[in-house]
Length: 268
Image: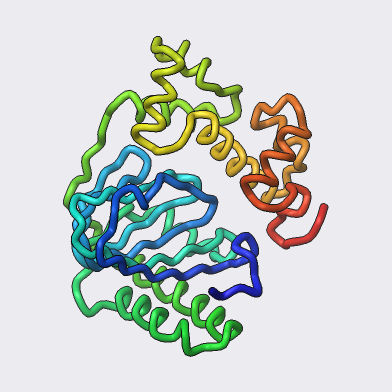
């Protein structure tokens, strides 16, 4: 495994996966503060991004934006294969950010295209290049793919939305991320029992309600801090009453203390 840089410090991460007999239990709901491009080339699966559900076809390209929860849902155990490229906001130009802001969450890519070529080239070169050279290749490949995405036709195929109670709860959390949030508060807000709130999170997202809220809040705080908001203020904006609790949660989820997590990598 490549590894001079920690996952947190990596500006670009590339990963290739091919599983001959995949199991749905191996794929969990997760989210992070980076952009992610997923190129699907084999399998039988749906892909959830927040409350949108896409049925994947060969050569589909998915765009997952920062802090969006996402999960692969296998529909059968046929072999599953995909490429993933994850990258941080700080590597993007203003024009590239605009491209991503206007991009579709999914594109149906024709065979023998630039996007597929870039991913296959990364797969081929990963074991051949020295780490420093592979970092340069990832940077070049990303900017090339983003330029190509700008001109991809948007698909007319509609996704479907679950429109279930869990989606209403997730929307509420996203819209009220600066407010106090808990399973009990959600229980009161949606007129259901606290235990049922917990059941919904475990059933649909494979994560506890508390952990989901904590992670969403910490990712939001990370974004605030990266724009120059002091860590103490970020904690307040995320409705943490105790900074030491925020500090522990931040270090647990992000991997480093909040005072170090700035876009230039230096301490406050």
